[in-house]
Amino acid sequence: MTASDAGADSCVLIVAAGRGSRFGGETPKQYRLLAGVPVLARTLTAFAAALPDAALSVVIHPDDLELYQTAIAATSDAARASLSPPAFGGATRQDSVRNGLESLIRKTRKIVLVHDAARPFASIELIKAARAAALAHGAAIPGLAVTDTIKSVDADGAVVATPDRAGLRAVQTPQAFDFDLLLSAHRAAAGRELTDDAAVAESAGHRVHIFQGDPANMKITTAGDLTEAERRLSGDLTDVRVGQGFDVHAFEPGDKVWLGGVPIPHDRKLEGHSDADVLMHAVTDALLGALADGDIGSHFPPSDPQWKGAASSIFLAYAADRVRQRGGMIAHVDATVVAERPKVGPYRDAIRERLAKTMKIPVGRVAIKATTSERLGFTGREEGMVAMATATVRLPAGEPE
Image (cartoon, rainbow, N blue to C red; front, side):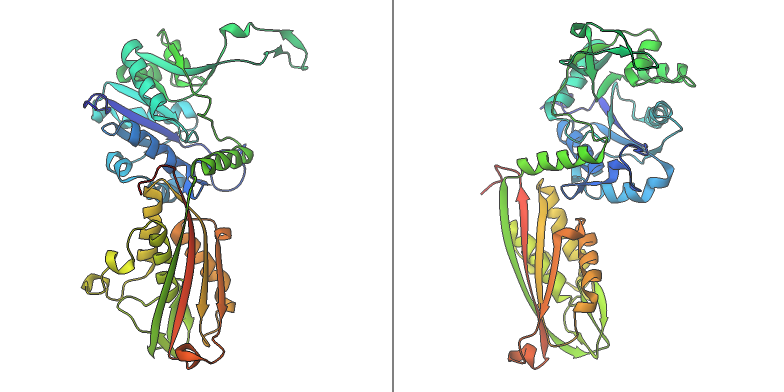
């Protein structure tokens, strides 16, 4: 791949400032989890893979900075390395794109690709085709031939015309342009309401080329679309792995036990180099085991002083990120704690929520159980605690053996 093929002449603007009113709920659709990863993160990772040398930027709503930071933490290392600070959107999508373009001026790239954050399935082939079409034509957009008959109707719902569908195209993103062309067109169109960036270019008198779109490049608009996207993505993750984790810690004098990231009052604490969270350690090892990626000690050696007293959530978040970096998802985690005391039941839901938040997966994918050893063995004598965990991970087909 040459420097140009890798997108050194290009920048990518992801539009993520919308509220998603048709989707519903408090969290905008671009920040919803899709197979355990925010939609925006999947979109950014796709563009970084297709054009690794391109400059990436995202336009966000001013109220979404925390959501944005959480989302980009789940992207690939390559995507984070290419990202500029986010730009803030305006009252309309058109305003948001213009703001984003203004923020990219200093990047001095020839081509800009503008893409909706809620289209996470843009393929490498489609993204490269967009860039090539912009280089050839100055303004280019992906489109699909319309297969259904289209009707124009009046205000009463009566048909007034049947357009010839041979000349119609359903338009997608990424839409790609000469950077200066699109910025100039947006500045000239400020205050007007146009439906997409192609319309902005057209309004400035530019001819827009249509290249072949991709039927798989769906846009998530409704909650049903997200369900369909999850079904589609899960179908691609056919390499199903199961890992197990086991950890033991002895008690020592103290006033609480850290379990699954939750402090539980007790007359002792668990002994260990970090915070000795026996449950998080077991889950971490289960995830690493599913990846055949060593164990917690190989990544965070207890001989290293930087991990003395460290929160075990650091270890678990790291292991979960390793799954995402491989293009996978955490399908389910099931763990059991063995101890006479303290009693885990009253804290079960808080532990599940904390583990789910740390792994960035829905709480419905986390199961926690607790039992005693019927006063037998070291746990029965209340000398320590045991945690066992099983993690089911789905990875893309063709993962290395």
